Length: 233
Image 1 (cartoon, rainbow, N blue to C red):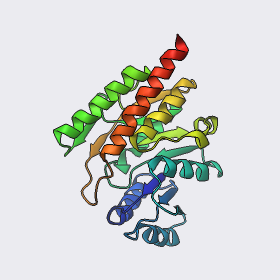
Image 2: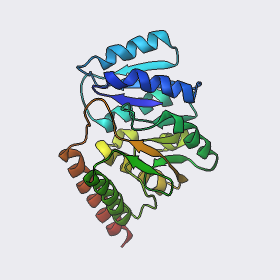
Image 3: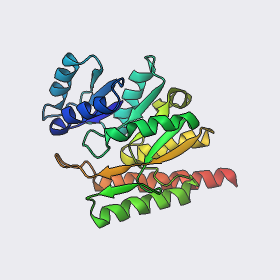
Image 4: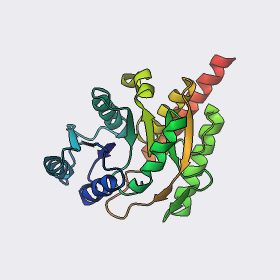
């Protein structure tokens, strides 16, 4: 489990506890970007108490994509068969992880999806839902990517998928990073499936969503889509 954190002290211990309640054998890597609220120190304390918890400290806030790339590198250097992405804020229910892992029997990448049948969101404002649905529809149109929720951050990768990617060349951040990786996996011929999840808006702490994250996703997806069309013509 790779869990990036920045100012998630209020949420981290509870999420790790719930995760180990749902999947006792899971190892957790907390990738902390020098959180000023002491999240990194709390992560170290959790690691001292539990050998299943590990911590990777980074020197500053460098973005979600860079945090995941660092976490994947850490995991790939060890003997893990699969690596999981999950937010620390409680929006992804650890209790649903067994369903995602079970789906690996017929897949290489498993996406926890809000927008397939059976998926849902809780306590989201209407504009946030429209933004997510619209962004995913635009992604499907521009990239011809046959998934309903390419921007979600609760997912499982077989190690072979990540090993096949040039992660050092991934520059995208935010939700665009999620699109980037699943599009790379799909184009490489890996099997991608979606499993419905119930997404719950965070209760504690501040959302990391901002205008720059949305803008990056819009322009990168547009550029990728145009380039793909030009190469096909």
